[in-house]
Each structure stands twice: as structure tokens, then as C-alpha cells.
Length: 274
Image 1 (cartoon, rainbow, N blue to C red):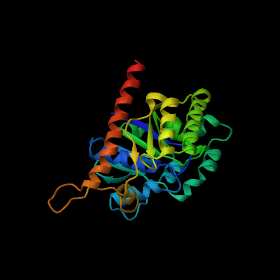
Image 2: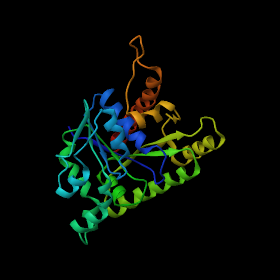
Image 3: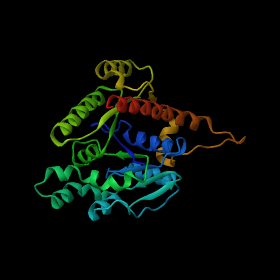
Image 4: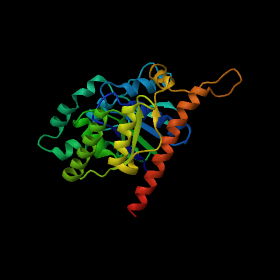
């Protein structure tokens, strides 16, 4: 077993990156029965908060900051639910640029590949690893891209997000050209603010022209239940008859479709590479 590592990104905030990381990791673990790990690289720790609530965990003592400081992430894993584990973030992780500069002065390559090194022993324990990162060109995104096999780009259907996606792809190419990054775009996921909105439809059309088949057919539209997961954690509720709650089913089905498409895109990329 060697995990596929996915970074979920866009250089614009508030487009749904963390929601995508947490939902895809949950579906991967629960629906696909894959050994799944989330690595939270964002000092705001939103993914950590959502997954802690998902696992009814009130306190997480292990964290990525200690792992980076000690050079070992294997001791910083917190189990969330069966098949889903987390390496939590905290505000102290905002010191990452200083930590890297102190550890690897005058060695840019080692600074941007430190996470790749730390993930090597974990790849043998999992089938899928998802990385959540801040929406900035920074040591956080550099390390995430350099450590990943595949990139999932979030495209909220507004012009600034479209620009952020293009900037993200250009920067990904910069890391490939200058540092030997080895990642492919496995999917661009449209997240619509308003289904049927004129601007939303235009941006989606422009994206399909610009990025072609990289844009997934599945579109994530606004759902109140997805918003509720931020506050309550991800779950599949039951109604009085014992059947699954229809709103939870609807929210989960969208991301199950996303993951199915990503699996197909990943297979196509592997076949292209021979």
C-alpha cells in the first residue's frame, strides 16, 4: 500500500477548499473503505476543528508543529473515525517559514521538500492522504505541492476564483520547472455560489474552455447541510424509520460523485504515463 497524496487548492480564500478536503476524506474512509489521512497545514486549523467534531473529540494534543519540529509525523496522528485519521494543525504552525529557514539555511530545495520527506513513512500506512493548505503562495503551499501526486483545484464560480485557479496552475508549473515537483491536476471542481446564476454560468463556461476535461462534471452547489457540518462535524443522520436522512444523503452523494470522477481521472493519467 502506498498512498496517493492530494493537495486541494486555489490562491483565493473562502472557495471551499477545507470543505472539499473534509468531505472527500470522509467519503474515502466511510464509503470507499480506504485508509485515509488528512494533514492540516493551515494554522487556522479549520479542517482540524471539523474533523474533531466529526469524531466527537474535545481535545487534540498531537499536532503538525511538533512533528515538523521533531522531524517525525508518525507520532502525531489522531484517529477520528474508522479508516480516517488526522494530523492536526494549530496556530503555532504559523511559524513554519522560520522553522524551515532555521533547519535548512541556504537550502531552498530542502525547505520546500520537507513535508515530502516527512510523509514517506506515512504513505505506506494509508491509501489516500489529503492536504489542506492556506490560500497563499507560501512555504505551506510549496511543501504541499512538492509532497503531492495530484492536485484538486477548487473553482468557485466567480471571476476572482477563476483568476486564483489560473495563478495556482501557473505556480504549480513553476515548482515543476524549478524544483522537480511531480504532481498532476486530477480535477478542477466547480463550486457554484448560485445554481443558474448568470455570472456563475459564464465563469463555468469560461473554465471549461480554458481547462477542458480537467473540469469535473459534478458541480457542488450551496447546501445548508454542508454549512452545518462546519459547526457540527460530518455525519449521516437517521430519521425515525431508521433510514438515512435525505439531506445528509444528498450532501454526501455530491462528494461521492466527485471522488468517483477523480478516480477516473487518476486512472486516465496513470494510463497516459504508461
